[in-house]
Figure 1 (tube, protein in one colour):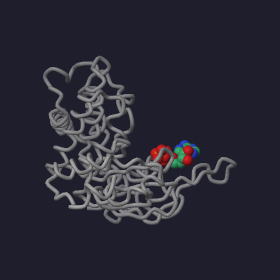
Figure 2 (cartoon, rainbow, N blue to C red; figure 1 turned 90 degrees about the vertical axis):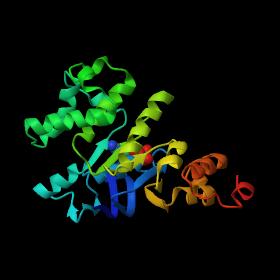
Figure 3 (cartoon, helix red, strand yellow; figure 1 turned 90 degrees about the horizontal axis):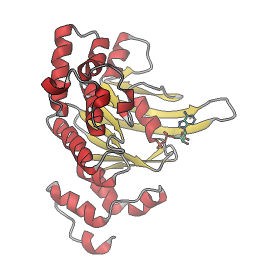
Figure 4 (cartoon, rainbow, N blue to C red; figure 1 turned 60 degrees about the vertical axis):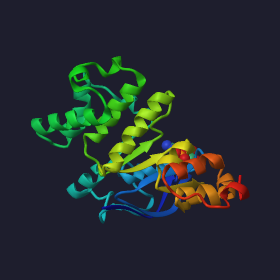
Length: 273
Ligand code: ADP
């Protein structure tokens, strides 16, 4: 299973005086099993790119396919493929709207056409995944929860759609360090169990260094680097700087390497910082 981004460009307000090219000839393949970090300066095209991956917007030129099916097509197959990439927007808790936590999480699977029994099963398992106790929270108003809990409910709503690819835009923004750790350890656990692949947009290089198996660096609408995060953080520091991205301090990168059990290159400690 894979997402193919085939030479896409995207122009906001095409033909208007405010025309803005947000993506320019981006080409990549995302395979099942990857944990992809997407970084780049503000305005580099990260959000525009990820919105293409579940067909929320369609390219001005080029195409995006999942398993060969064009997400811009007006067919049942295309709709179902679009659902296989679940999007968690920034501050997803702003989109909570139902009276109870369980109803909110049930909204997506209901829309997918799942029967009552299946909806119930999905709500329970998504809540378990998200670490929200069903007995205690299912009947509560989502608006009475803490910020971190609300965020987890919102993410559970996407999980309940059973996506193959989970796309997250700054999922820890605005959370305290504990809330942040909680969110990422859960996402990592699910990823590790092979529940879904992850595409994570983040400004937090520490999170990216610890989690991502592949890194995409966006600059002025172009995909300028695509590769192993550790290789990019160790050996492409100047290019990152030119893209307006600060690579994590070398010591941090080396720690992340070690934590993953990857051998630290001999010369890394002395030659680059
Ligand atoms: P990032 O997520 O990296 O901050 P975006 O994808 O949001 O970047 O934006 C890429 C470019 O497209 C920026 O120049 C931005 O100003 C522009 N842009 C984003 N959204 C819109 C929009 N709705 N209308 C017009 N221009 C937009």
